[in-house]
Amino acid sequence: MNNLDYDKALHYMIWGQWDDLLVLMVRTKDNFLSKKIEVFLHACYYPVSEVDMLKSHESLLHYIDHAQDTADVELFI
Image (cartoon, rainbow, N blue to C red; front, side, top):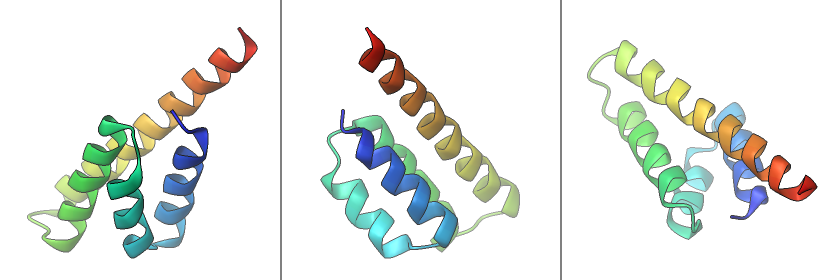
């Protein structure tokens, strides 16, 4: 996978650039990242509760962190 996608996703989340995050969701080849972004954006635009939004936010951050760690390990092998 493209490690740059994870950096972009993290940057867009930190700065609240939801439109760019949506474009990244469509363009990335990582289906899990795309789905996590979709769930997060849906929770932001159509909030049922703040807890659901925070869960999707934490889930996306956790996946980005995991994916970056995995990509870093592959570079050293």
